[in-house]
Image (cartoon, rainbow, N blue to C red):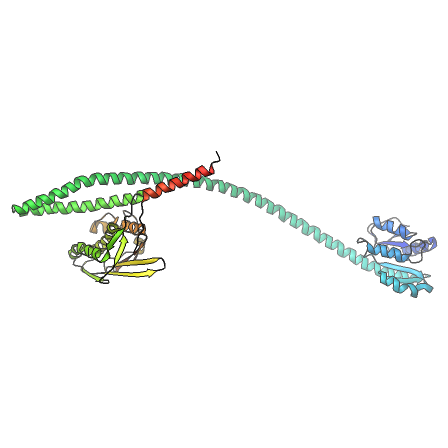
Length: 452
């Protein structure tokens, strides 16, 4: 037997006759390039197959102890060896008897003894060509698998590196975000405290200013009446100017006081039943002088009987007066339309107030800051028309506190429409009581969550 060469195909010859083994070994070594391995029994062949890789088996059928059929069955039963081609060798007079049985077991071919050398060599060479092609295919497949495995490993390493980098970036970003969030929260808390302090200061100052101002208004009114009694017309006109200026200043102070209460969360809602028709007539009568100042005509589109409302009368009156006074102030020699309707929705009955003017209008840029405190359209508007820029901010806050809202629609130099929608029934709101209840609930939660 020649020296094993792992690069050559390996042929296992199994025969109990040593002369046959020698003859086949000599013949094959002479005519084919292969590593020839001999086994003198089926058991010896199985032992070789356990430790060596074999490409082709030449298997004698008639052997003592374990014949070729039994040996082939055992070879086919093992996963590692079940696909190795088996060529059965038997005597010619037995060929027809054994051929069918051999093919049933899984034989690849069948040769009879005495061996026809040219036929054997031709068959072996054919098998070896297929085996060599299979080896080439397997080696190419293994090479591709190795390359693909290396690519996948490289991709995995790169992905792991990227994941590590991204995780570190996210961790850093998370820390920065947490720090920014804490800073923002601290800034918000400081701003809230500053805003509360400012609102408290403004409220106190407004209160302190109203007391002497009411005295000025009251004394100017009393002196005016006395001036009329003693027929001092010149003094009366001057006293009326003082009285009007005082009332105007009182209105401004009241606006500042209201907005400070709203920002401080101290503004309450006190609903009560009111005849909406009577309230609206009062508002119209109050607003008439404002309309006449700029030669405006007030046109009302509303049912004769507006029905009842359960709402905060003071706030509703101030909302309507603010809208009518604004319409009158920014419109000259024009028409101001007021439309009032009631309708029933899924969440109850509502009242809709729409005030439309044909005044200077509002641009989109100005509309964005329309309901913010202390803001007006622009500086020229403030110089020409006056005001603090609090009226609409207070109106929107009041409307929302009463369960409704206000929206505006405007075209520059064409006019504006302000629409307020309010529920017919407004719930009572006490900010101090609500804050106390929230604090009590929070305290109770802390007690429950504290195991001590």
